[in-house]
Length: 245
Length: 245
View 1 (cartoon, rainbow over the protein chains, first blue to last red):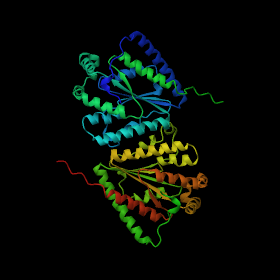
View 2 (tube, rainbow over the protein chains, first blue to last red; view 1 turned 30 degrees about the horizontal axis):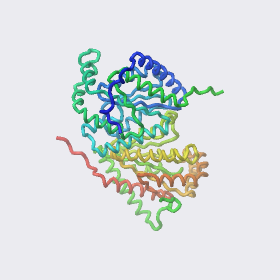
View 3 (cartoon, chains in turn blue, purple; view 1 turned 180 degrees about the horizontal axis):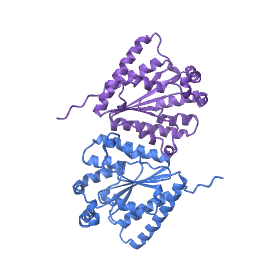
View 4 (cartoon, one colour; view 1 turned 180 degrees about the vertical axis):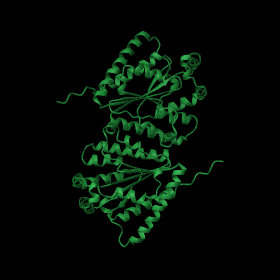
């Protein structure tokens, strides 16, 4: 049973930051190599789900961890408010479309989990529907895993409420970050305890497990995500296909 | 427990064919009315799955039963051999895309069930995968039902092996039907017992039930499908939306 309040949002103390950064660089490079083989082989695929509160560093993680991957084999999908057409379908309809093609890594910046997070926190859906959707999500992710050799990675970017304030304030203070500023984020922040409860529900009811990533220091976030990706992908039988003669 | 050998492929005896045809016309007309309200209301949708052996009359059912529906609210999707892109995804990927928009009736001529019928009969997939896919199908159809108010209709067009021969031969003899002739159909016909076993598995393991439609006489097929559709749709709260003032 995962309790978020019991998990630190910060890197372990006494870590050598320089050393961690070097290791991260190694993992990022290795991830690029593995992804190229995966793409050439066309057998496996990977789905990377990034979830976390506003300013938890989802975009930054994409930029830092996957920047050695070949763009041809990578697809980053940011899910925003559904369109009218999307709303006129079940909640997984728009998600399933973007499931990775064999060989590719698809990254979801926010995802199907929003439909049982933000929608639950604002009470737009009933608790009964939350449970049904959780079951549908489990069935959907299992389908990808067994039927398309999809490795499903799910990262919860675990941010402290204090650090969020610093990050959101920077969006106001730093002209380069102005475009990310959104008054709505400050309102959502007031619902922090409800969000934490909803995230805990998700973390504890997913059949494919999550990795909880402490993100108050961004260098540690990158390290954990890159390391997790590489260690799991190393276990697949990735190899360049042989030439047919 | 459904056993296909115990279910007739013919209409009950002593039916007044003329009377049935009149009733069918009534249901077909009523279906068109209901579909128009459904489209205007934009709340419910319907998925109609048509499955059956070659020459069981799937295309004819579409033509005869839905010809009073407004084309704008109707989408007929014929699933053939998957494309390369479709093969590089899980088997429900190409299916989910065509799930009905709220307000619409989508008809699948063949469907996701082919992936546990033809693929099983030819032993292209393991029995373990058949079971997993059956679970995925159940989860998928339930998702449509609870999350998008989709009425899921599934018709198994129950044809006798003898009648199939007559129908396939007509495709050879009648120039207007030549385009439907396919040598492969005669080869598939040799696998009749394996197909029946696979259909029985599907009929007995679906959580949303099937309607088994005797189709040796096409007028009876149309009657059962039209009647089933209308009777179920009549139970929904279909109504034209009121004008907002």
